Length: 203
Image (spheres, rainbow, N blue to C red):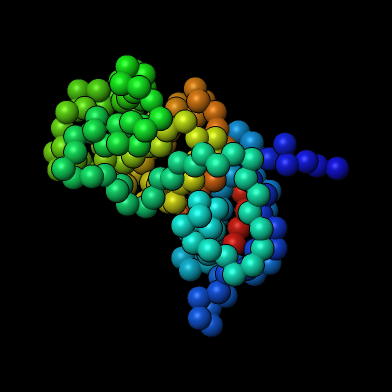
């Protein structure tokens, strides 16, 4: 018999419709703790909807989502950086309610160093390349002390060389700071490279 203690998330009999379009139909998946699980499938198959239901951004029609811990970080397809804030301030924005200033400074410096962006900490997003913005989003997600990290096609739109570099930095972060990761993608090579377990959704 398997217990929830073996998992960070359990999905039971999940259904979601948009008008006449059925995107999730009696879905059942268990996501193991401290592993990277990849959800693979074409656009429109319900991958992002599943992440949004797990995070609480979207409500399922029926079914159950069981979480071991409520702390969740989410890396969206878009970087979602606040344009008026510096790199440092964008990360501090999600930390200031849970850390004192000294701890926050230490955590931000740690993760910016790991993604090789320390010298850009006082830059605005408009001064960063697309790859740099993606690295800030990844650093911000790891800086927030969640047990669960959701990633919605986090490497989409990057050229192959840049994608490889950022994936290497992501794996370095993950190995130093293990947590449960659920990532969605339509890229089979990404899934094979990153996934401890891979599930495929169809339309």
